Length: 158
Image (cartoon, rainbow, N blue to C red; front, side, top):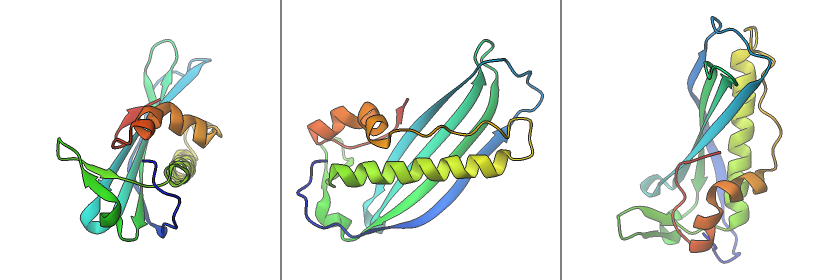
């Protein structure tokens, strides 16, 4: 993960809402919890990295699921093949600067927040917006060990 700080050409290739679920029959507790998972999938042959973020809101006491949103942000990385090695178990290891990984995570989280707000508008739970986070702190919490070990980044939960 700790690539030399040479210029990387990248862009957002696409944003897709893969899943949205709202369960308005659930009684709303005074306290609601949320969790999110992040799945990062390199697609070397397409010079792409897919960030899938799934957010789930649940009642704190009963753990009934209220909302679920899954969004995929697709990033294009120019000449990704030259930055990729294959691990011993056959997974691609993409060597990019840490700041770029954190930026892609931040952008993906923001896309998820926006699509959740759009999709839940007009429902009982339309006020449940994803909070503002510190993307560097959250990314390091989820993937810090992998960044240090220069391993692949893959699905993690918060």
